[in-house]
Length: 539
Image (cartoon, helix red, strand yellow):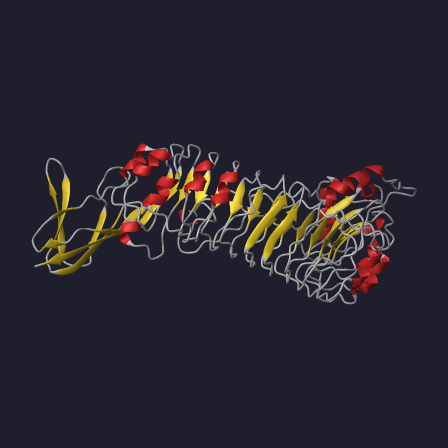
């Protein structure tokens, strides 16, 4: 049985450079978080079952040893593999008693005949197969963990013939109906019913020791029948749930994943360690008192204010695509190391001064930020992503010297005035540890300073360079230099003109052959430095 984990990209680099997710000058798609929201909370069910296997009172053989005949050769091979038998050895009524678990997903198994002799079998996972009957399993008294996701030939009645289940995965089984019958499993601990066309979960009211439940992709509007003192993990993504306020008992909840629902307010549970509530209708993050919360993802909501009372362990907060204008209220989240604010309406980020442990800050697509100077206080910062946030030379200067900064992304794809674009790389001396740089869409003609730094990966594409107006017949110095101090290898004239070089200084000049607006395009041999040169020529 496979646990589903929600993974959030943490330290991502440049998508357009083939390094992963967040830097894409035109469109930013950050799937936040390298670590799973439940990474430190989630021990797999197999680990729990190992303990049960070691403690269980096992059956021993009391009769004559005979070979077992399997009707499904794939199943036989999987059993041999688990028992460490060679191809020529037989599975017998004796050695099959050593079979404690069997996992074979997507292998095409259809017939389980032969497993009726596996009296010590405790765990099976046969997801994505074509099994048509569970009859061989019905008398296996120790069998408690069963994974049968996507076995379209099975019915719920087939499953109900297995009396001792405490762990069950029946996700993606369209033929299974009337899940109310699952109420007989009062000792259920872990339950998967994703994609099960559920409109209610009344049957869980009897499951008082439930620890983990997965109900993604259903039609639920409420889950108020949950009533377990032991529930720690709740997965209800892609439903229509409006509130968790009336859930009877989730007093021990540690991890909630409730993306794409209808929540209007935050879930404020003191035991919570991980929360993902992306794509809901949450309007505020006020009065958050979460003494153990470590990670919260609240992207694509309508949040316009934040007020954290206490969150001493909160290290990763993602608030992408909300309506924040200011970060006031974040000051008490002093242990934040990752903060993602992509695509808000930010003007004031002064609260960043109170976040001394920030390692990664994403402020992409916030062109209305007035002052970048609060970031200068984040002297541990390793990554700053500010693409399409109207980064001007003046704002770069406000950053001061960030000696630990390794990644800087300040590309521009919007309509930034020519006199507001970055035209020089002199600022690189303020970031001596920098190894990755994205500066697309500005007005830099000379990137040779990159060759004098630690920068290993960079993108300086689509530079828009405007030369001063000249008279027809006049030459203008064209100071285009790539990282290696060379003139770009490719020059394409859009209007008639020519490049000439003076010796011995090797100064390059451009001269146009017509009156009016003239232009050329250039690119380096590796296409990391490119753009256009424009110049107005008069008579």
